[in-house]
Amino acid sequence: MVKNYVALLFFNLVFLAVLQSQDMQIFKVQDFDLKGKVKSCLVITDYGKESFEFNRDGLLVKTVTQYNDTDQDITYYKYSNNELLEKRMESYKNNILDATTSMANFYSVDSLPQKKVLEKIISYDKEFLEQQEYVYDAKGRLVKITTSNEDGVDETTVEYTPYKNELTKSFFINSVLEKSIRTSERKGKAGVQKIVLTKEYIDGEPNTAVEEIFDVNEKLISKEFFRYSTTEKKFVQEKKLLYTYDKDGMLDKVTSKTATSQSVKEYIFQFDSNKEKNWIKQIITPDNTYTTRRITYFPVDEKEG
Image (cartoon, rainbow, N blue to C red; front, side, top):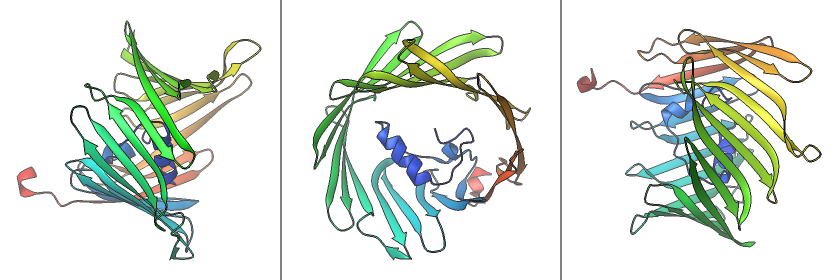
C-alpha cells in the first residue's frame, strides 16, 4: 500500500509492483497521505526527490522521479470519466529520452455485458511489449487477467471464498496458486479490527506471509512477517512491527521485534498552515533520516467557501 507512511520515493517502481499484484489501481491524493485540494507535492529526502501532480478531482496526473541531475523518469496519466485512459512512462538518461525503455499503456473499457479493460503496452520505439485483458464480475471484482506477450499467453484467475466473517481472495496463474489474501474482522476493546493475511506461494507451495491488523480508524497497528518452514511444515514468525499514534492520529513510533532483538523508531512531524493540515517534514530517530514535502494547493472556489 502506498500510504501508511511508506517512503514515497521511486514511486514508479511501486506502481509497477501494484500492477504485478494482479489488479489495476488509480491513485488519488489520499493514497499519498495528503489531504485537501492538493495540486502538487514535491518529496525531498536525503537520497533523492520525486514530484506528484494531481487534477481537481484528486487523481494523479504526473510523477517525476529525479535520480540525479541528468537521469529522471516522468509518468503521465490521462483519464476519461475517471477511468484510466492512457499512461506514458518516459525515461531520460543524460537528459535524452530513451525510447527503448520508455513505454505507453493504452486502456479501453467495455462495460457490456460485463466490464472488461484491455491494456496494450507499446515502447516508444514502436515495439509491442504486452497486452492484458482484465475481466470483472457483476460486483465489480476482478476475476480474470489474460496476458499476451512474446513468451506466450498466461491466464490469471481470481477466486473469492467467503467463510463466516472472512473473505479469501486467491490468485492462480495458469491454475497454480500464487497468492491468497484473507480479510477478516474481530472485536476488541477499542472496537472492530480488520485483519489482512497475505500468503505468497512459489509453484503452488507456501513461501512467505504477512499479517496486518488495522484499528477501527483503518490505521495500521501491527504487521507480522512469516516464512514457511519446510521442516516444521508451518509458517514461522520472523519479525513483528507495532505502530503507535499520537492524539491527532499521526504516527508516533514503530517498534520492531524479532526473537533476539527489539528496536524503536520515533517519528516527528511538522505541518503546513493549510485548513486540512498536511505534514511538510518528517524526521525519524534515532537514524535522523528526514523527508521534506513542498505542497501546493488549487485555489478555493467561492462556492466551496
